[in-house]
Structure formats: structure tokens, C-alpha cells
Amino acid sequence: SDRGSKEGMGSNIFSVYADPESPNSWDYYALSKAKIVVSCMVGGQAAEVSLSRKLKKEGVPFLAITNSNQEAKELYEEGCRYVIQQEYLAAKVVKELWDEEIPKGKARAFDDKRREHKGELSDNHEDELLRKIHALM
Image 1 (tube, rainbow, N blue to C red):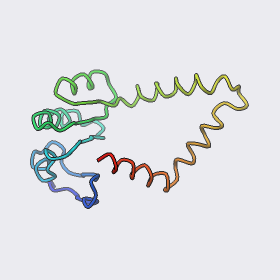
Image 2 (cartoon, rainbow, N blue to C red):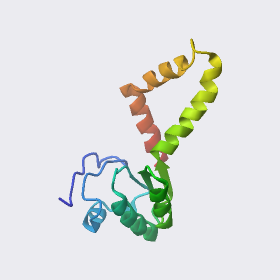
Image 3 (cartoon, rainbow, N blue to C red):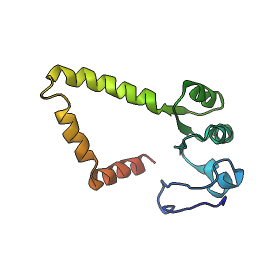
Image 4 (cartoon, rainbow, N blue to C red):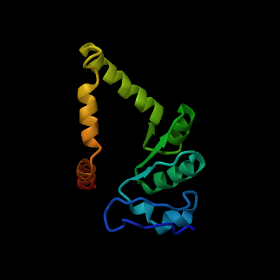
């Protein structure tokens, strides 16, 4: 259905589960009035390209997630403001972690990061993160 789900629409951040290639979905959710649109589709390049073109015309910042350089280049050419490449981002973080943690030695490497990350997996941390995102909007 083009109407999808509007669960969570009482807040200023909500997930949309609808046909991403359908202009009817874009209109129904008033994406042209959004402050920002972030697409987390996997394997949805054609839809993201179409949406990128539309949102560029409307002046709405559009961010997308992809895994390949070619997809990222295409999205940038079509007006996407920023593309997050999962594998690139992961490699960048691993490099930073490596440089920070390996000098601690095998016995201590990643211990602090592990504790920190486990703490971030709590519901309270997720709520705090959502509050920060809401404040930005």
C-alpha cells in the first residue's frame, strides 16, 4: 500500500514503511516539507535516485545509506546531500580504534571500548540519543 504506516507521527522523527518508489508515498508523508529525509533502504538504489531528484528540487536535504562507491557517486550526481557507505564507515572506525587500542597491549586492548559500547546498548542510552536527535530538529 502506498499509505504504509504512520506509526510515531506524533513526534518530529518517524519511520515510514511504504513504497519508496511511489510519488504517492512521498506526497502522503509530505516529504517535500521535511527538514531532512534519511533513507536506510538496502538494495533500493533506483528508489533512492528518484527520491534524491525529487528532494533536490524541493530543497530538502536527503541522506542515504549504500555499500558501493558507484552507488554513492550516482546518488551524489542526482542531488543526495550525503551518502553513508557502511563498509567505508566501518573500516574508518576500525582504523581509529586500532590506532587507539592496540598500543594498550593484548591484555587491555578494547576493554574500555567494550564496556562503553555495552552501556550504550541500554534503553536509557537509546532514549537519550533520540532526545538529542529531536533537539536538532
